[in-house]
Amino acid sequence: MSKDNSKFFKHKSDWAVIKDKLLKCYLKPYFQKLLKSNKSICYVDCFAGKGKFEDGKDGSPLIAIKVRDECLNLSKCCNKGNEIRLLFIEKNHIEELRQNISDYSTIYNSPDTKKGSFNNIISESIRKEKGQNVFLYIDPYGIKYLDMNLFKKLALYKFSSIEMLVNFNSFGFFRCACSYMKVDTSKDEAFGDLDELIEYAPISFKDIKNPEKLLNKVAGGDYWKNIVNDYKSHSIDGYQAEKRLSAEYKECLNKYFKYVLDIPIKLKPEQHPKYRMIHVCNHEDGCCLMARNMLNRKEELCVDVQRNGQLCLFDAPTSAEGNIVTREEVRKEVIESLPEINKSISKGKFLANLMTKSGIICDFKIIYGVLEELSGEGKLYIERIPPLTRTGKRSSFWEEKKGQQIILWRKQK
Image (cartoon, rainbow, N blue to C red; front, top):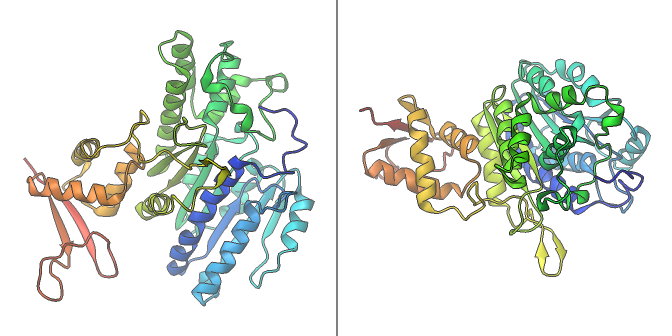
């Protein structure tokens, strides 16, 4: 990790472009959907930065303001039940942030800004949002600011809904864990180009009294020690270690949130992921909306960085090994999920459970085709409400529009 952070906000890096495009691409459908709930939305950028880069490109705060205003304009209603409140938390650059967002005029309520550490501010700031919708964008200046205990606490608050989009620098964490346990990673290609992922405040164990406690706090446990030991003994390589670490981290989040999506981020299709964006929520609609958004906007979420290359957000549709997912592999994942159906389940919950377990492995249409196939084989029953079309034909829809519903029934032995 680069130790010189003086140029952090001078130029918006390719990695920052990816993260913010991912955020922007999701915020619009998220705001539009939740505006119909007649409950307010509280959006929090937990590490807001300056709001704008010195090269003129918008940071995440300005992106959120513009998307918020666009959605409220489209909704044609801005009563209290349709309010979107914005909170930007920033410790180091609060004055620059306030100046940059003040330059952008808005006809709706002005964003609130608070100076200080996200970990110290967030709990008290959103406690008053009880019964409302809350979304946290957590793109920390360094992995040391992530705190699983805080996430657990937030999950217990009585919100109407809560979602988080978290940047987890998995390779960076594992390299730090190896450094603490005196395990050399300098010759491993898996860690060869991590300096591209500049952190504003990378971990320096010289300034930390109890590094092990910090690593446990970030990871949500000490499982990382076994992974480092297996890596040290050459039982696994660096890429396998990162996958295991990410899977364990995801499992920790899954203890507190029903649905957890792991979105591996990489620069080129042929590369391994370099870090993970993790989306968590407690309602199947949020999980499916994020997954569908990613699948529907692959082209939009790519940015040219060189004449013969593109930035690729995530490696779907691929298997855990990085191979293209075949229909048989999708079928296998779906069949393995069938025993989790307790007699019956809505289509949305089934998809959310499947993606939490297996990832965003393919287009939904492929999954629907597999379900139809399994229904024909008598392994499950697909109930559609209404069962008949207006012309009296048997319903065959998969997209649940107003008044439509799909329930999957597992055949009992």
